[in-house]
Image (cartoon, rainbow over all chains, first blue to last red):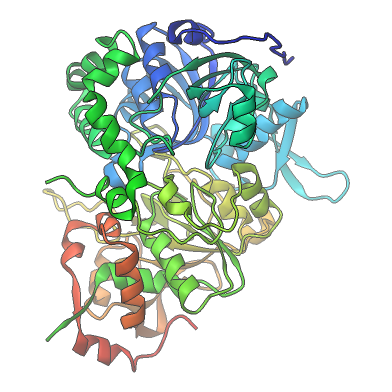
Length: 313
Length: 292
C-alpha cells in the first residue's frame, strides 16, 4: 500500500532526512550518470552506517559506486552503473559484484519503468514484449511468459517493484515538500509515484509562490516525507543551473577507487565522506568557494563551459 | 601527402551512413562516435530524421560541443522538446523508433551483444550493464552495432580474448538468434534486429541466416587482420568493398562539434594515431559502396 504525507512543514536536517532509510530498504536513486544524483544524502547515509540496501534504477554512476565502496549495498537491480567511456567501469560496484558481496540482478531501463509503473498504478505486474530470447529471462525467474488473451502475442510479465524510498535531489522545493526538477527528470518523477516515500534534498527551499513563478512543482508534496536544503547537494555530479559536473573531482575519485578497496578507503571514503561531519565540512574539503565558483562558471558562455571539461595536464 | 581524416572520423561517417532520413533515431549514453554520427546525418543526408539524444532525451538538440558524459545540459541545448524515460521507451515498445546503436564487450556471430558479465555460468567479470539496450534491441526497427575494440592481440601465452566472439557469455541485447534456441522471427519481436556492425577494422552486414558477414574494409585494413581478430571463421561477402571516407563537409561538422576530442577516448590507443591521406581519400571515391 502507498501512503501520503500531508504534513505542512517537512523541513529537517540532513541526518534526520536519511534516517527515513532503514537497513535493507529498496532504494530508487534520483538523477543519473553525471547529473543531479543525491550525493550529499548518500554521504550522510554512509556516515549513518546504513547497510544491506537494495538499489534499482536506470543509468547510474558515482552514486551507486560510492555506496558500494562503503559496503552499504546488498542487491542491485540497476541497468547500468559506470562512468561511460570517459573513465570506464565502476570499480567499487564491480568489486562488490565480483566478490559476491552484492546479489547481482541487473535490469533494463524499460523493465524498470514497467516495474515502477506497476507499483505506481497499484497493479501487481505489467507486460513487456521485449527481453524474450535474452539471458535476462534466466537471471530473473520471477519474470513470467504469457500469451495475450486478446491478440495471442507473446509477452513477458514483470512484477511491480515498490521502492521503500525514492531519494531525490532537486533544484528547488518548498517547506511543504513540493519539488521542482529542472532539466532531464530521468526516472525521478516515476520513482516518486512508485515509492512508499520520497525524501529530498534541494539546492534552495523557496516559498510556494516562488516555486510557482519558477514554473511549478513536478513532484507534488504529498509524495514527499521530508526535505532538506543542501546547497551543492549533488556534487560532484551536476545540478544546473547552479553548477556543472566536477570532472576533476570525479577523476580523483576514480583513481582512488581503481587503486583498490583499501586505497579507496584512505584516499576518498575517509577524507571526503567519513571525516566530513556535514555538508559544510565537505564543501571546505573540496575547495570551498573557489570550487563552487569554478563549477558555476558554465553560465559565462560556451568557452567557459567547455573549459570545465578540458583534459587537465 | 596531406592528412585527410582520422580513423575516428571515418568510423563516424560509416555509422552516419547507416541512418535513413525521416526515421526516429536514438543513441544511448557513453557513445560519442554515435552521437557525432547522428549529428552528421541530421546535418547532411537525413535532415528530417528525429534525433533523440541519449540520457537527456532532447529532440533535435544543437549542442555547442560534445561533453565527456551524456547527461549534461550542454547536450540538450536548443532541443525542440524533451522526453522523459517512460515516453522514450514507450516509443520503442510501440514501434516508433527506427534505429538504435548498440555495442558490447562481446558481440557474437548472430549479433547478440553482452555488456552484463563475463563468465557463462558464473560471474567472472561484472560489466557495467546495458541500460535499456536489451529492451530496445527487441523493439527498435533496425540496429546498428558498433565496437572500437575488434582488434584482438595475443597475450603472453599467445591466447587471444576476442571482442567478436562465437557465442556471448550473456546475451544482454538480442541479435538474430535467442538463447532459447529460437530465431528472432520465431520470437516475433517488433524489431528486425542488427543490420550493420561497424568496427575499427571493417564493416559487416548479416546474411540470410542472421550471421555476421564482412562486407567492407578500411583502406588500411586487410582481410587477414579481420580474420585473426575474429573469434569464428569469417563469412565474407562476394564483393568485398573499401569503406568510403568522409568529405570535407562531414569532417568540418565533426571537428566543430567535438573540439575536446571526446570521441577519441572511445578509440583504442593504436587507433588514435590512424590517419588517411588525401590520396587515399581520392582513391576510395571510386570504390563500390557497401551501404546502399
